[in-house]
Image (tube, rainbow, N blue to C red; front, side, top):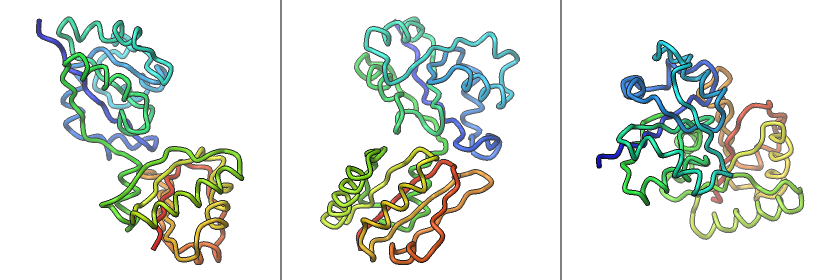
Amino acid sequence: MNKGKLYLIPNVIAEGTQQLVITPQVYAILPTIQHFLVEDIRNARRYLGNLKIYQSIESLDFQLLNKDTGTESLTRLFAPVFKGINIGIISEAGVPGVADPGSIAVNFAHTNDIQVVPLVGPSSLLLALMASGLNGQQFAFHGYLPIAAKECAKAIRNLEQESRQKSQTQIFIETPYRNNRLIQLLVNNLQNETMLSIALDLTGPEEKIKTLPVKQWKTRDLQLPKTPAVFLFLYI
């Protein structure tokens, strides 16, 4: 029996930028897909509505896929694929499977010999790395650092040591309302010569990317806006 395909559909990472960052490839493939696995149904419906591809969003099928989705649920969610029907995953923002629960479904697809098709789209992690000027040959993404200040400080120092040993760029993100707390922890715990890069509101109207030694960050106003940010550093 022929199986359908699993398409990994990128989403915008800044509101209202779909005409700038969503590729013609995505626009061409989406009309062939009627079934979607999504983190948030309301947001996914709004995103597809903004693309103005479908005559009716109401006719589309949306199923929840999040970090709590178990293997038994995936069998049900992939039912259309086993009938030869294509389905798509839509991330909350950016590309599926990268810092995103879509990887659960992608793993299921590989296990069940289902073709996975990634579509080109914006990734805040790669955009930040590209624009940082830091090592793009050796890098690691660590998600969120610990919330507790003492544990976060320890994690920063450990990651800096790893960066020193491997010449590795360390990448992580934070909840926007904790941006200012994190920047303070970074400048207080990193060595003065370590290069620190902060990428704010990527692809958005207030996009700002800056890379400086920590000692120079200490001389600046460290009040960051409460917008999505990517933080990177490299021990020099």
